[in-house]
Length: 316
Image (cartoon, rainbow, N blue to C red; front, side, top):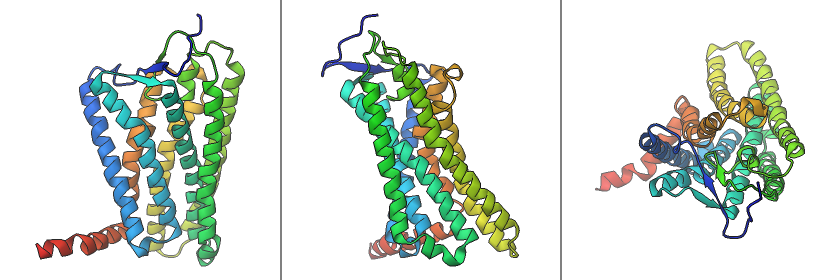
């Protein structure tokens, strides 16, 4: 195939799960509902963490950053997918595709690193409670957040720039929900075997060490929890950690499938389903997982609502 000329007016066609579904209208409604849920729940979580002074502690500071990442991540993908379906126009310009890839890689990479830092936070809180405010002082928390954003941005910039410099063949259809490296490389005319290996190394480098750190942290936490004398302390520690582990399992399961498993395990349909899971479903569920069983957050929510909403109702 002759490469098609990529000018400023060139575009791709995103052929996502809505285009290959037997019930696209139902899926579109579900995506819209999940997006609204993600906006509401993550926005409320950020509002409560910001407004209630009882939650101005390292754990909730990191949780607020996770909510911000989820909110931005789903906003990069979901509105365009829904609007494209409603307008029956799946085109995306070359520049918009590059921007979407950069933002998705940045937010996904930052969340990957942040989850490891959150596991460390729980390890220090449970295994070294007396030194918690020393090991997790504000400067350390900000360093964790800055490290997550900066490393992820640099990784995303490098891989986006390198991916988009390839010549692409006449077929412009990206059989995926969003512009991501694996499905886009299938359109490249050049030899991509070396670069595919680089993408695999990137996936392993960015996913496996943080996951290993998380597993090590929770192994030490479990050992400590089992030796706690109080049943109440054990229950509280396990509830907090189970929420984090649920989020970790959802995120790393999907990310490992996309960037670590060999190409022989991939198909456009499977990749589309996985992409829906980590760009639409997970951002909507994460705040619910963290807050529903968290009495501390529930109490803060009641205080914020009582302070800013109930007084107005009384006046009315």
